[in-house]
Length: 204
Image (tube, rainbow, N blue to C red; front, side, top):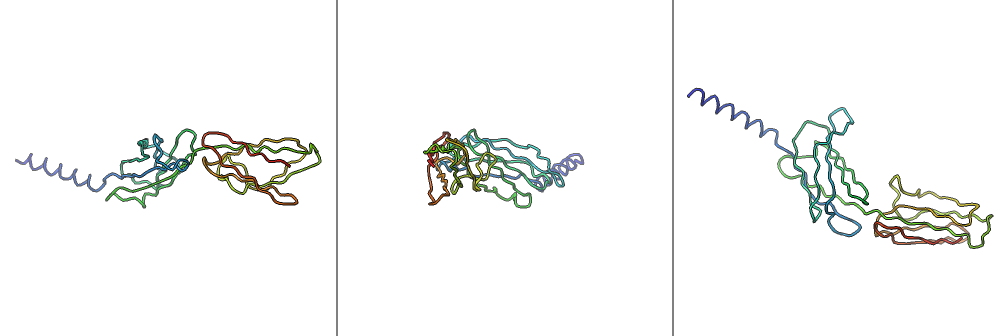
């Protein structure tokens, strides 16, 4: 009888401990901006950052379903924050910071995100007069500019050239515009194709 009571108390204690530290669940949908649909088969990795450090520790890897939905269930460790990374070939990586203090164990933590397919535009500058003394100033007025692969949006100058090709990356199915700064301002615009390169002809 005493053994039974002891076992019951131990099991009760363990059960209460488990209730005090339930798991977190983060779920939601990853939207494909370029095609206006859910992003299927995207890889999702979740890292935890311990308090007082910057080291990323991988704790979970998952993927989205055919509709772009995902769900992550993981232990509620005492950490400062989590880093969620979304990857798929030929898409821009999405990285989000989720603080421990912003999560709850009472219900799913809904986190919806969106990503864009990669696309490229070839800025093809052509010196129509074949005059090497001519120069051209231009600036990107519409297009992606917040990545390492992106072309700088600041004013640029081309000199001593008859022809120049400059490849710039952009979001798929999005506008890319270049403003030519000369005696009269002129804008050249094109829509980029996901996973492909389009050419924007710019004579000067």
